[in-house]
Amino acid sequence: MLAERTVIEIVSQLLDVEESALDADTPFTAIEGWDSVNAMRVLVYLERELGTPVDFQSFMAAERIGDLWRACAQAVTP
Image 1 (cartoon, rainbow, N blue to C red):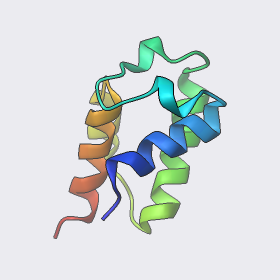
Image 2: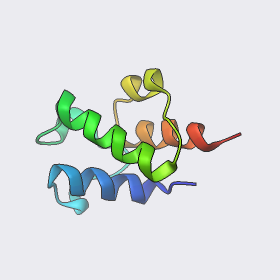
Image 3: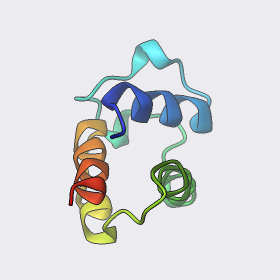
């Protein structure tokens, strides 16, 4: 299972944002550089890490990093 901290690390790395500035409650609107292109980059990276698709509806409904982590957790839960 993908840890919440791993999702934070991925977002930090792909968007070149300090990891310490992010937590589960961070809204995507507060992350500099968050846009539709970077959202897709994060989605593709997470799906490769998980080895399975993330539900696109859940991904698009996510407003915070914690929501994204929960969408990823659902993707790997049987």
